[in-house]
Image (cartoon, protein in one colour):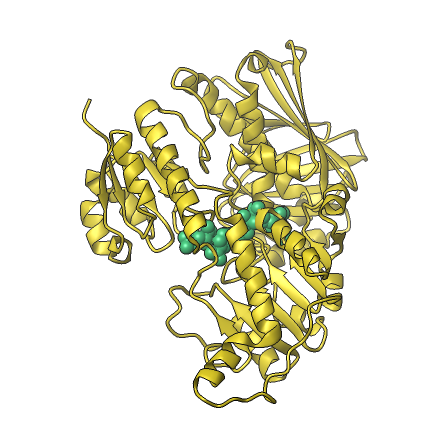
Length: 529
Ligand SMILES: NC(=O)c1ccc[n+]([C@@H]2O[C@H](COP(=O)([O-])OP(=O)(O)OC[C@H]3O[C@@H](n4cnc5c(N)ncnc54)[C@H](O)[C@@H]3O)[C@@H](O)[C@H]2O)c1
Ligand SMILES: O=C(O)CC[C@@H](O)C(=O)O
């Protein structure tokens, strides 16, 4: 067998090179290549594996040229520099190291907070310039102050812990944080508006998703205390930088410490040079310890995959063996889509997920299927959750996950039902795979349907009253939205009903608001698969 060949195109710790060599893999270490996308495109065709940090952009164009690439390994957490759909479409596994740099990044956030409180970088520059401006720098004490943590996942929860050590009062906003987990962390769980109102310092630790983009905008800042200080060591794009600049100018915000920027590398930015802004060049994960952790971990994972086919920490595929793969694949797709359907409808903390496997599917590797359900369910909230980390994340968040296996009792050869219990309601959805290998939705909340998962869909729950369908279809027509498929179902005449419509293209927010305003409609959601 010819040796697999790996390209390391970013500044990974050299520890990774040694691991690849020790495992019998040919390795090409070009730490600055990631910045030269044309050269990368020219040579990527020669490699089976690509190991990166954040400088390399694995775009669809690069992936298209990657004729023999089998795996992209991100030595870190965020995979926003990899076009995952393009990689998946080409059968390339994308893997990351979800926990290797969490402590280091949390420590960076705490360092930034303390630097803000005492204006350390400004005082350092002034002192070294020979100014001895003792009266210019008047800091604030941390003890007894309220820290608002937005996103209490791996990094956010370490920040909560460290901040309590500094004797701060910690409040947290995270839609996936259960009361039990909050209690464990010693954090008071609050809604976002309350956090904005009460916090003296606010630190961000969420992924960048459609829901978190500009989570700190002018409206959010207006709700904050006068003199609040803001720290972002998560992702640029979480803060509207123009709104922040205006709030710094008006002194509503007393200071901001930023490790990440809307555009990176950030060689110029409107916030640069502001007296109350502290910046670092995306250094959150930059410690010797974290870089060794993530480099060793990604090199081991990539070597395992290239040499044995074993998959771990994959973003776009579950851990399964070569023999199991073909039978399991359509059910994995069904499980992820059922989870995603439930996840996209869920707006409060999930306490329990019960997954029932009936018929032939109950004899398959249901743990992989359950991981796929959980990844689909958690991804709308967490962004980069993968099938391996999803069960751990669900457990950490106090979600009870039950698997029920049954002999065939339904009309289907195989049936998967995902039942989600949140702090406010229960919801169940079932699906199957037909002989054509395509996943189908067959039951939503006890209402029978028979629908494929479309790329873009509108889901409506309504009262079964005359006139609804006509008005609904006219709204779509008026918005020039083409209907691809239309499915209706109801519990009984005149009672609860649903409509599930596949449309061509994205669903505009204004259209959704108009559908929501129809008198018979209880809930209207845009879904994407
Ligand atoms: N600066 C750096 O160098 C650096 C290093 C590592 C990670 N990161 C970034 O830090 C962020 C957090 O990483 P992590 O490992 O803790 O991720 P994580 O997935 O463990 O935690 C993210 C948390 O955000 C929560 N969340 C999702 N949507 C939310 C919303 N709308 N409001 C509030 N909370 C929400 C999730 O429920 C989850 O608990 C990611 O964006 C990651 O890419 C940056
Ligand atoms: O590699 C880095 O330096 C940044 C890593 C960080 O943004 C991550 O998401 O893990």
